[in-house]
Amino acid sequence: VGIEGSGFKRIGGGLEPTVSGHYNYGFSVSAPERPYDPSFAPSEGLIASVADLARWVQAVLSQDERIMSKPSYDDMFTPRRKTPWGEIQMGLAWQLYQAGDQFVAQHAGTVTGFSSLLITYPEQRRAIIILGNADRVPRWEIAGVINAILDDAEFSLPPSSQGKYRLYLIIVAAIIITGIGLVSRRLIRRFNQ
Image 1: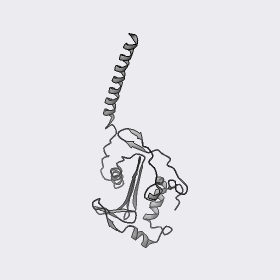
Image 2 (image 1 turned 90 degrees about the vertical axis):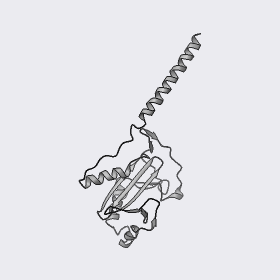
Image 3 (image 1 turned 120 degrees about the vertical axis):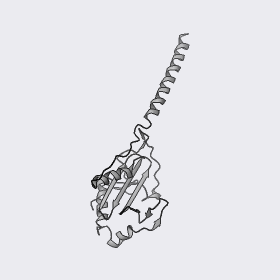
Image 4 (image 1 turned 30 degrees about the horizontal axis):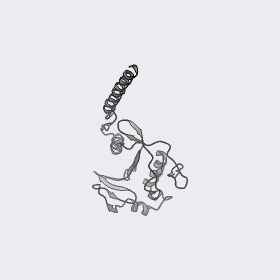
């Protein structure tokens, strides 16, 4: 299906991310890399581009038999287990639910400094892929805007948390600068005596 640059972190080819993860508190802070435990694969550690994920999801939505049989695709989208997330049930690697009159199959992920959402609407053969190198990305809100645009419907952009903490930073910086200034004055007075 043309997937070329994707794989798992430190397994086999040992791929590494080409971007750094971040915490997003209204400003960007580099996230520390957490220890990777290969025993969690394939639940975490997938490194993939939007292009490779698009090729893969296109093959899944068209039920490409080079990957698996058509009955296997049906099994993959069959609810198997309830979850604590309301009406969402688990299929085979997919979180499945009904949104109005649309059947939705999605898979979301988050690891330190990164977040993702692959949301599909199999009956419409539509998919939205969101990859973020920040831990707080309004993924479902972004997907809602994209869907509205595709459906030629009205939409509003999700609120931004950018700037939410800037006032706090300015206040903290002012306190630190004032403190440094006071300490400097005292030291200068001592040395001048």
